[in-house]
Image (cartoon, rainbow, N blue to C red; front, side, top):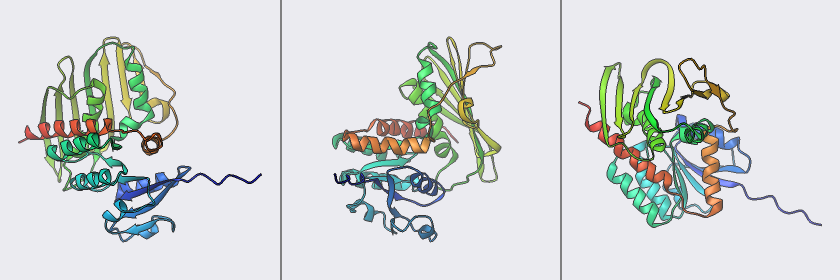
Amino acid sequence: MSELPDPQPFRLGLIGAGPWGRTYIHTIAGLDDMQLARLASRNPESPGLVGSECTISEDWRDLMEADDVDGIVIASPPHTHADMVLAAIAQGLAVLVEKPMTMSVAEAEKILATAQAEDAIVMVDHIHLYSAAWEAVRRETRALGAIRAISGVVGKWGPFRRDTPVLWDWGSHDVAMCINLMGRPPGLASATRVEARDGGETLRMTMDFGDAEAQISISNLYPEKNRLFTISFENGELVYDDTLDGSNKVRLKTSSQDPGGTFKLDPGTPLERALLALRDAVLRSAPEWDDALLGAQVVGTLARLDSTLD
């Protein structure tokens, strides 16, 4: 009996080889049955970052016209995202785009409308939403009653990006987490600048969902990394701390005296899980634009927050 041929790997095209693009390259290389087939980058170090089987080009449009990719990952600056996502949709390619989906409300609405009209696969890498720890948070919320309040502290020293302010860089994570948790954008949203120095800033975001309020501090001036997100319910409190390892990332407390219990988490890094979700959506051959809807809601909320800053 002749042996069956090996299944074709899931082939990805990646746009961008900056710090996060290099993380994608490393993550894709570690996943079975997944291959980085093409890279669009002007980074002169690109040839040393990928294997010989990966075709490198400087123009991202080359990836859209290629016949050897099953999906596109966009890890370029946010102001470039809209044209790339729309081009991928036009070519019938599934796309995973970095957060924020864009920095323009009009562009975000166009991406969402196009994804819906074309039954496209458009996913946004709000990275915490793909983590096993967040999966545990969503699972446990069902038994804890109504959400009463959300608080958070997030940031570290840097990065200091000219094209992506702190609000849009760090803030997009927590805005996405709040909307995902509450199931809707906030009714009211405002931001206050607490500190500004050394090219960075500390902001406090307030989002009112009617029956619960979220207060989140974000900064690229913290000397150490913070990633704390606390949800207070009628019947307890969930603490999500992404600076901790393993099952310690999520802790349930039922009283102020309770040290809290942890949960066993499924394997895989958030980025691995995001890439596998993209692959699975392609294999299902089904439209997937829930992320695009959330992405548009996040962009709209960030724009409202931004409008309240001096």
